[in-house]
Structures are given as C-alpha cells and as structure tokens.
Length: 194
Image (cartoon, rainbow, N blue to C red; front, side, top):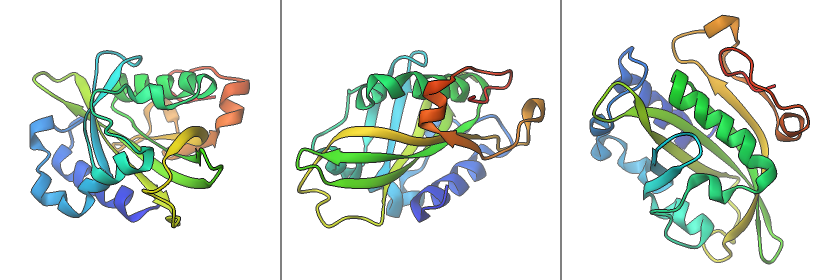
C-alpha cells in the first residue's frame, strides 16, 4: 500500500478501529476523509461470493465509466482472478485482515493503467465483519481516465496485512503475483494465499 489515498485511508481506518478487529460502519465519518471520498467505496457482503457496492466515489465510478452502486465487486474481475479475490474477501470477512494489491486496467481502445486497491473490514450491527471500506486509485494517473472507461482487469498482485500482528506466524504485507496464485492456489491456516 503505497499510494497517498490508500495509506491515508488505512491510517484513518486503523485509528477508528482502536484495537478491535474492525470499526463499525457508522464510525466512518465522511467529513474526516473528505479528500479521499472520490476514490473510496463501501461494499456490503453476504459471504465472500457476494459483495455489492453500497457507495462508490466519483473517481472510482469514472474509472469504470458507470455508477457501481448495486454491482458485485467480484463481477469486475475475470474468472481467472475471481477465485483469488474471493479467497481474499473470505479472509477479510472471517479473520479481519486488510487486503491490498494492484491490477492492470484495460480500456476498449486498449489503453492500459495500473491501479492500487485496498479492502478494510467493517462491522455493522454485530461484531461480525459484513462490510468493506475500500479504495481504488490510479498509479501515475493517465490522461484518458474519465474519457475511456476500463472494461477489463487483470490482477497483478494481492496481499494481506494483519493490523495487530502476525496470526499463525504469517508476515504482514506478504504478497505474490496473481499468476502464481492462479497457478497454485491454496489457503493455508491464517488465510495466506499460496
């Protein structure tokens, strides 16, 4: 997680989390992160296979050339990346990890850009994680953003961060390429993607 939007949103999320597995959704105060809202979203999950956009910032919608509210987060990904993203979502929802990574976005005119994303758990009315606060930000923002929507994604890398340490001796920030994950995908105790 290196982009300014990602690091600032993570710092805010971690502060309102205050040592818990995740903050409550209602604790996210838009006025405290107003400069980040255009690249921020919230999804509501009913399991790792269904996470629908509840809110999506203007910049995130611009990347894809449409309003994302109501769409499933996994539907953005091609089938070969959905399994990796689903496993990442499962670890976020079940273990309170923060997911992060990068992907290539390709437009109909075959223009390419690299994007960074982060996915941070939120609870709602119980202590179970049911929502995700996320961000998508363009790295070296290309001139065509907003005029030529991204129509295809390719996961480049994905990782997990454990805000309170290393469960089962897993290292924070451990990443691997998406191709490696697709080629030999399995979940180890603690949710590490291998």
